[in-house]
Each structure stands twice: as structure tokens, then as C-alpha cells.
Image 1: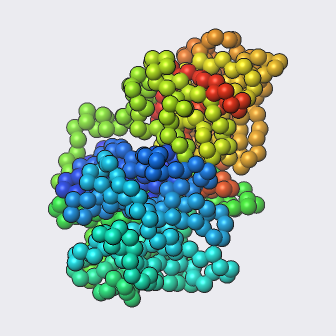
Image 2: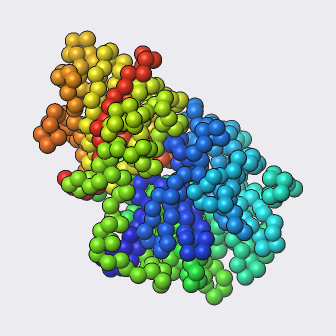
Image 3: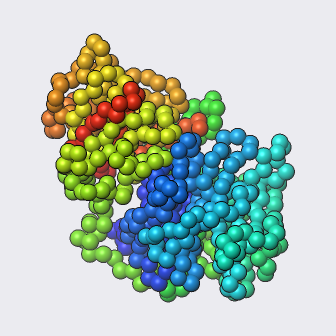
Length: 568
């Protein structure tokens, strides 16, 4: 969106939206982002001006063709590459089936469509050398796929390696030899894309992981098979030989807004201006860090929102290299918009800031569940929310959720959630639930993955009867932060949570405007990429859910769910 000075304000896609890939078709821009274990797969956004973005749907939404059951945290769909050629949209992507081991299972696929909203084709299997596949359409009609490749050997022979192979669109299969186009023993590259300009092939790749050292490099060659020369310039500050020559990075600038910047993709406007979208991360105002003795990422800052999508204006130098238009290689939080874009009128700007899900209630956006389908902004874990899980008609005006697997399940959870997009947020829900045993639960959840969450839920206790309690799960360590507080039967209960600067406070009560605190003020920084011991590529989600570990499918009814950003 625009800020008050008529500039684009980053991030343009806030909250968990990593690995952006962008194209322009006529006057329309589209971005595809990774979704990992969240269903549906591959989130698509649309814009006409690179400023205002709206959710256009998902590319992987057919359970007959796309199955994530059993997928581990932060596995699933990685780094989609969206391209367009001669009336057809192409989407290459990886489905990671095993990652936390030496021998990764990285299945690469390609789907096509004549319209961005689908229907998308049956997935075509590609080679599985590694992840981050990217399809390039050469001007002679030939097509090539470039991807990184993984090395399970101990020790590894290369720190980074990129491979290229031709794709036959008629036979719909990979063809010909597989060639290494980049090998290095110190500089790690991934997320590659190939572009062609003025007779040069440009290899545009993410470097140095996805943490605070992340960046973006560019290389070029007269042949698509290489050899490629890496762009090296004086403005690229390097403190060791292990650092890449990055045209964009936030490393060495811990004070700027957009940390972790890298994994770029390029687009040209109709007027010939160039922009790069890239992933980034924002920290809380207070210092949230892993302990110095943490098993993973000791002492590193924590990013609850996950990796987001930002945009930068670019330009080509006289000698044919791509650089930030503003100079240097540090990403900017405010960016000049395309010349063809005009600042919106105040009323339009205010409307653009409102999330498109339900109606506004005192700064929040409420979903009354009056529609025939769930709003597309919701996602579920691994499986779609079909009539086995939910119903919008069993009790009109309410969402009925049937209790299924437990929160640690990687198969059939009944859960819907939306992204945490700012460090100051509020969520609330009205629920009616009459559990009969302690294995039946339903409520409001602040969640990173199946091992890490804060869950305010209604259940049943042999002594307290119907009750409410607050559960904390941190890397498979479970702790109840309150006792089992009795509730009156047959009454709707209001649940609420507020987050501020990485801390969370929960509330409950029988009247919406008279809620009481439950549990302490919690440091929720453990719900972050850095703190979770198994998955570390997604972001915190806020939602509602229901479990019935008896197998009988006890249901909970939700009258509404609302979510908003800012202070309340």
C-alpha cells in the first residue's frame, strides 16, 4: 500500500508469505508464495499497480492431485516459480517429503493453466535433484529448468550447486543431459531464476540461507549452460570469504526494518521500469532472542511473523548489471512506485487497508460465517476442510467444527487459521461447545506448527465438569498455564487473545464486552522460525479448532471469529 508520502510501504504481503515469484501479464501482476504444510497450496496474489495486492486464490486445491497428509512441519510446498508464455501460466514447485535428514526427498512438479484462477493441470513430475525449480522460456522456444541440488554426503563436496536441464513441453517431461552451471565450496546458492536480456543469460539466485545473512546474487553468461560470471562491486560489503557478493541483503544492518532479505524475482512494468520482489522478516520492538545455549540458532533474534514479501525498485547499469535503483544493496522500507501509478484518494487508501474477510467491528474484521463457503484467507493443515471436518449449514450462521485428530497430528486436524501480520493484534471468537470427556476440546489458538502453540480451549474435567484452560506447547513440552476453571453449561463463551510486541494475553467470559484475563502475560517469541526445533520456514497463525480424541466427532459451534491489527 501507499504511505503518506506516496511511496510503496514494505512489506507488501505481510505475515507468512515467503519465496515470492512474480510475473506481469498485460497490466496484471501476479505473485506466488510458498505455503509448506498449509492447505490449499501456493498462495496467489494479484495487483494492477504493484502497490495494492489482493488474494487471487490458490493453485493447488484439488485433494485428488495434492496430498499433504503425513507431511512434517515446514515441509510440503516450497518456492513456487510462476512464469507465463504464449497464453499459458506455468507453475513449478517442490513438495518436500523428507527434510530433517541427510537424504532429502524433494519432488519437483509443473502445472499449467490458461487462467491464473485455474483450473490447473495434472502435476507433471520433473527431476528431483533438489528444490527451488524455476522454468525459463528461451526466445527460440526451448524451455529449461534450473534448480539447486542437495548433497547428502559427509562431508559435502560443494556448499552450493545449481543444475540445468531442458524441459520438453510436448512430451511433458525432462529431456537431455543434466548440467552443473554453478558449483562452489563456500558460497551457497538456491532459489535460482534465469532471465535473458541483450543477449546475456542472467542467473539470479538467493544466497547464504534464509536467516539474517540472507541475500541475492546475480551472474551472467553468453550461453545458458555457462560459464557464469558473478557480479562483484565495491558496494557489496563482505566480512568473510563465506559471504556472497549480494546485490541485495540486510546482513550487517541489524537496525533496518527488512531483515533476512533475499530470494528475489524480477518483473518489468509496461513502461520499462524494473522491480524485484523478495522475502524479508520483521522483528518485534523488544529484543526477542534464542538463549545462548539453544540447540539451534543460539542467540539469534526471533521472527514470529515468519518471512514476508517486499518489493524494491531496480535498474540496469550501463555495463549490463542489475542493482537497486536507490544505490547500494540495502533493502528499503519505502519504495518509489511505478510512474504510471497514482496515489489513491484518502478514502481509497483507507479501504485498501481493510482485510477482505467479513465486516469491521471496532477495528477488527469479523467473519459471521454467513457465507456458503469459508473465506479463502483461511488455511488448514495438510487437508481441506470438507464436510468431514466442518459445516456451514448444520446450524445456519454458525461454523460447526467436528472434532477430529489431536493438535500434534499430521493427518486430519479440524482447524482453520489466518496469518499473524503484525506484532500488535487481537483475535476473538464466540463458541458454544458441550464436551463430555477430557479428550474433547475446542477453542482459540495461536500457533506456529504442531509442536508449538498456545491454546485457550474448552474441555471437560471429572472434577470441574465443563471447563476452560490454557495449554502451552513448546517443542513437544506441554504445560497448562491455568487450572481447569469451571464453566456454566449450555452457554456460549467468548474467547479472546491480544498480542503486543511478542507477548500474548488471553481472555474469556460470558459477555463479549466483559472478559477476564486467563493465564499470565506470555512471552510468545517461541512461536518463531528460530525457536522451533523441527520446522522453521513458516510463521505464526491465529485460528479456531476442535479435537475429539474419542473418535466420535463431537462438534463445536462458532458464531463468529474476528481478527485485527493495532492496539486495542
